[in-house]
Structure formats: C-alpha cells, structure tokens
Length: 314
Image (cartoon, rainbow, N blue to C red; front, top):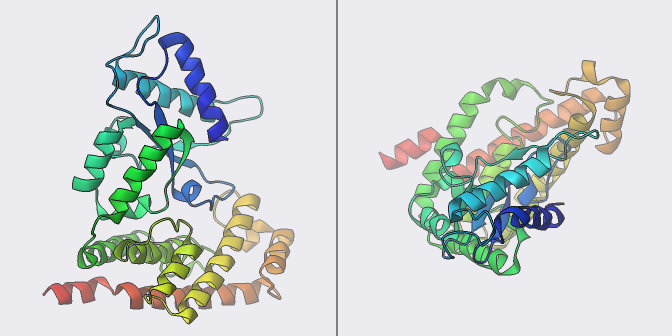
C-alpha cells in the first residue's frame, strides 16, 4: 500500500511545488509494520528520511524551502493514509519513533538521522530500529537509508549498558503493567507476555550484532545459533509466540477492547479453542497462565532483574 501510494503523493505535491529536491525521500516502517507482524488494529509506525544535500528549494512555480517541502510531503502522506472516506480510513499513523519524538521535525535529513543514531539515540531507539525496514521511496534514497540503519545497528554496543538499560526498561514496564499480571487473557502486556519476550529478543540481538532478523521468531533462531538461547528455549519461545499471537489476533478482530470471555461470547471462545487446539476456555486459560509463567522465568534468566543489575554495579 505504501509503496504504491507514496509515488502518487510525491507526484501530486510536485504539480504544485516542483519535484522533490535531490534524491527525494524514503519511508521507514517501524514496529509491527517493519517486522511484518501487524494485527487487525495495528497502526503504521513511520519515519520519513530525505536527502538534505540538495538545492535549497524545489523547482516548481511555487517553490518551497527544502525542509518545508519534505514536511509537506510527509503531512500529505499521512493525510492520504488517514483521511476519512465513505469506506472509512486506511490506517492510523504513528510518527513518535522518529528522532526527537513529537518535538522533532516530521521528516529528517539522512545526515541528521545518521548523526542522531550514532551520538544521541537511546538504547530503546536502537532496539526499535532492529525491526525497521525501508518500504517506499526512490531506489537511491531507499538504499542509502537502509545502509544508514544497518551502520547504526552494526556499530559496537556495550553489552553491559544494553543489558542495564533493558532491565531498567523492563522494570518500568512491569510497574506500569502490574495489573495485567493477573489477567490471563492479556497476552501483550505484563511479565512473560509478548512485549516482554520481544524486549528480551531485541536486547539479545543488539548485544550480539544480529541485523535483519526483524520478527521475533527469526531473532530467537539467530540467538540460538550464537548460543545465547538453547534449542529448548527457542522451541518454548516459538510456541509461546504462536499461542499469544493467535489469542491476540482473534481477540482484536472480535472484541473492541480487552478480551473477556464473558463479553466475547460462546462463538469467539470456541474459535479460540479450535485455533489453539485446546479443549475448552478453562483449559486455554490454564495453558496461557502456565506459558506466561514459563516465559517470565526465561526472560528473568536471560536478562536478570533490576535488583541483580544494581548488585552487579555495586
């Protein structure tokens, strides 16, 4: 969708303000879009990178300064994706993962992106970059952007710092999501759930220089090959991811909000049991609880806990 829509957005802007200066722009897909793991309610995490070495303005009858041109282009892309039509809208769009977050420009020069990743990016931003891929734009700019992303990830990352930062992140998430630990049907948030497993795998990938394995199962298999995870660990992780993803996908398709068997109804629960090859909802709930506990223990073992990290630094 993006690869087909983006050239049309560029062409439309060019009729008013001239062609895109320089090599144009590239669109980076972040998050679940980047790793090809979207659910039916996922938004599009996007980042727009453009060539900042071109002429100072576009060449049309109503020329725009370089930064303004690409800001307009980004806003036009967002509008094309989110505008309300008689059939609804295509997708929600999230630009918060761009450098400097909400406070930064909506489109970023390639040079600024490279400098930010090398000098200012937080560990969590490099974790997010592990799942990213370039999905639209001129071929030249796509290649340059992909190379910049790979260079940022291939740069040395101190394993001790990565581990300490991830443990701190996990502790904060655990505090925010503590209420979910008792909600067996919540498969994303909380200890031993999807987000917790993904955080562990991304930390391992960043520490060991694993690039290009964007989806969680691929990261797990790569970490088995270098010995950070055992074959038994990977089998358990893949089984957990499959179970949690099935419950998440069906739940989000069928229910607006939190999955609750009482709200879901008999048909949805029967579907969940059939897809997960479980006899009944009670058995599925027990299985979810057991897998969540198993994964929480594995993540604790691989990453350690905040108290252990503090003791090591002490």
